[in-house]
Length: 190
Image (tube, rainbow, N blue to C red; front, side):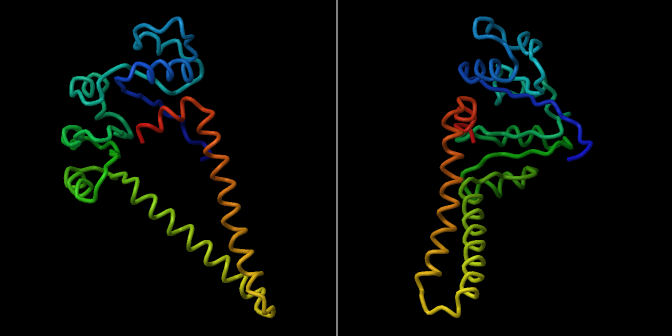
C-alpha cells in the first residue's frame, strides 16, 4: 500500500516464554534484560510491536491499554469465552476479530458486534474450494489443449503437476514456520 502508515501493534499475553520471545525478536531486548515487560518495550529497535505481559482477558488491562481506541483488535484466546471482550468493545469503532471454533459461537459473536469471526475450519474449507476451482479451471484448459490427443495420461499428468507445485510451496512454508521460533509460538494461538 503506497503511502500507508505503519501502525503500532500491542500484544497482551500471559505466557512468559512467548512474551520473552516477542521482546527478543521484535524489540531487540537481549535475553538477560528480561524483567518487567512494560519498561523493556521502550528498548525496542525499529519495531512497531509492543509485547506486554498482561492478562488479555482482564477488563482492567483493556482499559489500561485503551483497546477501545485501537484501530483493530484481534482476540486469539482459543477455548476461552470472548463474550466479555465483545461486550466491552461494542461501544468502540475498532474492528474486532475473534477466533472461534463453531458456527453457533460465530453467530453469537456477530450478535455481540464482532466485525469478523475467524473460524479456522471455515477458512480452510474456503481455501480448499478456491484450490479445487483453480485446479479444475487449469485442468479444463489443459484438457482443451490436449483434446486432439487421445491419451488421458497427458491430462492426468497436468493435474498431478499442479498439485505437486502446491505441495512444494506448502512444504517450503512449513519449513519456514518450523525454522522460525516466533512463528511457531504465535501459531499456537491462531
